Image 1 (cartoon, rainbow, N blue to C red):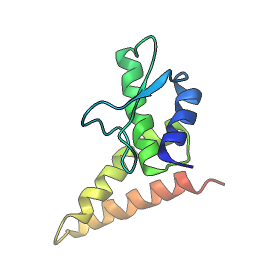
Image 2 (image 1 turned 30 degrees about the horizontal axis):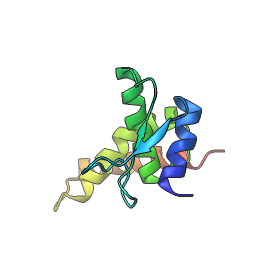
Image 3 (image 1 turned 180 degrees about the horizontal axis):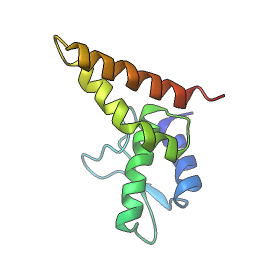
Length: 111
């Protein structure tokens, strides 16, 4: 499934069906595709726009979990990405990264 197909499904589940796609210059809603962005009629409210931004991130990363699960591990994922950029991490940073990995994996690998 492409990120665009994933986003369509996520929007239908957590937001509302999108009306169509637009191809505005420089528009890059999802990487690895033609640069299309979803259009909603009527336009999204500010709260719905925040939800859409989360759904786009989920589709971009190919995440298969609920929106609530994604939001719960979003900070951990960002912290792990930052940790990779640290040349000489401290023991405390490594411990925090290890705990973040455990939380992310516990969310992804459900019992």
